[in-house]
Image 1 (cartoon, rainbow over the protein chains, first blue to last red):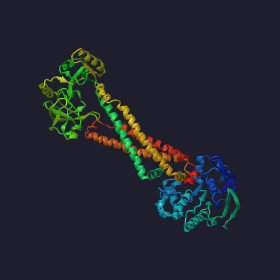
Image 2 (cartoon, rainbow over the protein chains, first blue to last red):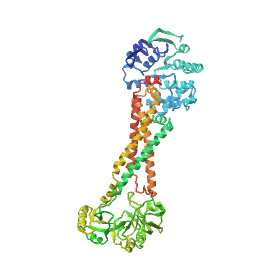
Image 3 (cartoon, each protein chain N blue to C red):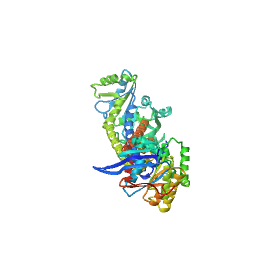
Length: 231
Length: 383
């Protein structure tokens, strides 16, 4: 059984009386430890698919089953709890909380767990060590470079050991060196830590790091899943 | 408890805005404490009145005196165990013309016997009784003017013209904080002798009588008024409480006016706090969306925003209420004329803090509900 099973997924947005179809007839399977890149022009529905996989948006039709759980059937509270346990989000603009230090930002998902203060500290330090920022623990986001901010965001995404990492243009706001570092980090998380990653990107170089690439256009898959490069 | 840090960090993210909001709450609650204390102090001035004391005055008006000859007839009334008398003096202290304090000419032999709530040492009382120009002053009044026993105090009469000099022979303490400690009492005998020289002797402002049984006050009052009915100086007898209440009601509906003022003041604070919380929540739309993405449930988001607004109210409330109590307590202790009888009650402070907390909570409701209902996808797209 696949980690992610998407069947007949359809998403329509309503704006006043207008119906705007964003995704249609999406079929998708993602195996555990996979690294998938989603590509396509702006407005093709990549981010919408990512949001649906992460349970922060609801499908109009179809089913999304992740780890055996039909997330479309979960109520709001249960979905939030499921998200906390199974999903790690990485955003293009990092979305760190400016009044919290790197430590505080990474600790946020753990506040929802029953872990003790000491256990939370151990987890946070471990995540920051993985992203190479154990010496930036007490720095605020404004005191970090873009690449460092994104690494803190990645630490936040992995700190609760989620089933699936969802990255929306993770290198879109970075210079080429920082982008390369982030992509290497994602590769390491996939290879060394066995994380399943779905990454939305416009950048073909970024997509090359994935095991396979899916193309979306006008809400539909336009090409069959194909490996970008050998594993 | 693990979310306290997050709430505090958010609260102090805009220090100036938070500081100004807390300041507005502080001012509002300070005013609340002051206004409520005004009402409770007025009430207390009535409540401290002794139920076993009756005040006998001229039926036509308080400004007309009663003859001294009534004292023996009053003492003979059934159930009466003590009689004293006094005159309102109403002079000005030239060294501080705007600093009002009450002065009474009192019968030196009986007055302090009927007012055991005014505490004097036997030596002070003896010194007061032995000298025609002796006076006793309250401890707050003495503190206000730095008066000591032996100090000569000269007053300028307004009702009774001329300069009147008295020597302080004692400083009385109030048995409870509600009892006034800002009054001057001097010997009626000396006052009467001077008035007799102007052919106005033997006139008493009011008599105060003590009853053996406070439950007999109505019957005794009727008996006294009947005794002097159809005389040239008919009396009106009432309990000391009713007598005091008459002065309070002269000021109009103070309680109603104060209540309306309190509502306006607190409403102003509420609007400021609502505005602050709405601005704070709107600024953090994206962050709230991120927290939800991380798995923070709607109910927790609602609680976090409410905790922040409540804390904002509570901080202002604590500073305003305790600050108010401290400042008013200080002014009262210093004998300041305006605040001398102000006693900030504990329930005023707690009610104020609860109001501040409640208003903080209410001010956070609209933004908290908005944050809880926020759709993550829309918020991330907008921001």
